Image (cartoon, rainbow, N blue to C red):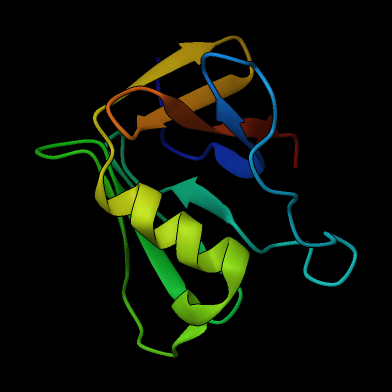
Length: 116
């Protein structure tokens, strides 16, 4: 798969065992680009959380981190986003859905490919 140029948006935090959503997402009409990223290479992407520029790396280590330092990590949804992003263990791609697994693969962040 060629990742470069593709954009992905967070759709849900999901528990693997139950298949249920862990935490509701912020209203996307308030911030339509929040929790989304676009790959600029086949292994790195940039995007945004509520207030920060984020970086997603697939190699050499799977991680999501904040390039800027406005402390939106203290807000519920964003705190989970950063905590999960720092503890990613694997990912899978199924059609237009990407699952980034964290918490020893007990949970994942579900991202959906966006059509621009």
